[in-house]
Amino acid sequence: MNPPDAFDWLEEAAPDDIDELGEGLSDNERHEWPYNWRLWARNEQLAPQGEWRLWLVMAGRGFGKTRAGAEWVRTIAEGIPEARIALVAASLGEARSVMVEGDSGLLSVSPPARRPRFEPSLRRVTWDNGAQATLYSAGEAESLRGPQHSHAWCDEIGKWDDGTGQARRSWDNLLLGMRLGETPRIVATTTPRTVPLIRRLVKQAGEEDDVILTRGSTRDNIRNLPGRFIADVEREFAGTTLGRQELDGEMIEDLPGALWTRALLERCREAKAPPCTRIVVGVDPPASATGDACGIVVAGMGDDRIARVLADASVEQASPERWARAVAEAARAWGADRVVAEANQGGAMVESVLRAANASLPLRLVHASRGKSARAEPVAALYEAGRVRHAGLFARLEDELCGLVPGGGYHGPGRSPDRADAAVWALTELMLGRAGEPRVWWD
Image (cartoon, rainbow, N blue to C red; front, side, top):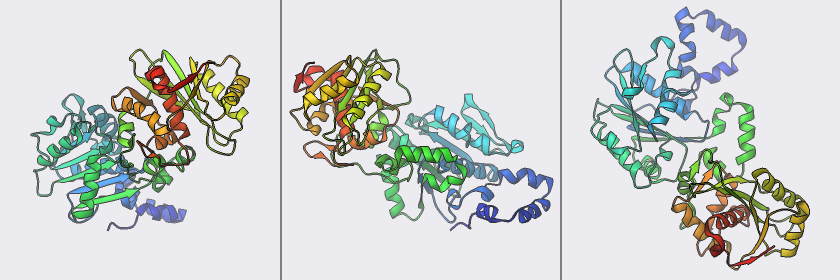
């Protein structure tokens, strides 16, 4: 067990006590004060004591995982001149931008007088005492075949591409090269993902004494995070399955046989969509104002013929007038070419309220003769084929997608997958055309 947090004393100490401590420091000690990691770190950010070969830090966003990994590498490099350290990320770009040059990367956490030299062309970080670290991409498993290391820091292993087992091959090649020094060690930092590599390491932590698992949540680091950030993410993700994963640090298991998995959705995610040549708004109207949400999902397609989910504009417990206005606003904001609305729950009423909100709405009413899960299957196949992407993070929509099981209906969260159904209608219109619609009522 590590000692209690030194930072707890600083938070609770009286100003006179802190002034007295400062007066007793030399100029050099005052200069080193901001870079004394053991002073500022929380206990769970410090490497475990005792004998271990793998320390897995699996926690929510903003926990301080990157800082913990970088500080551990700095401690090793400054204390062991012969250290040869592997820095492995999902890509070389991320290894550089996050692990080395990032706000919590190696260059930032090091005192200016002892800052290592980074040579991007050589993918190498070198300390004055001779210790070295080399950058690797987990997407290039063969680059880890051959090099030998004494230590390694692997960042966001849940993001490593494992479509063809690449992530596991990279990890195995790294392990086979951990043969320098007397006690080779690996630190792996990640947000939980139900991917094979993380499953394997968590299982090892439960069975092997030299594999240590540290868990944590975003709130554990609340004193170092802007209050606005905490408020924003809790408003967006509180109560969602994705929030339990991304904020609370839980590893959410996928439903057996589910049409969508977390890993599939992560593979389909991109930061920003290219210009779209066609935009569709899918709508799943609620049966009543006090019942289910009105699913409103915007999807588009560009010249590359890949569909993107662009927005989830769904509204909850809304009157017909309110959800109709939300549909009209989404269509206006995104310049929609078509609004596709399910008409099973009173087709005339659906058309009436939508026309009242915007008489010129490019509306098409569709009638579903199959269940939600059955309608979703061909759309899920498009995701598997890489023909649909998510331009951003849509927590509640993605929770619902992961609750759809072929032949088994819907298994939550909530009573009905309204957002998921709206997305299915929009993507069916974009990608599958009339073949994906059992029956169509034209306006």
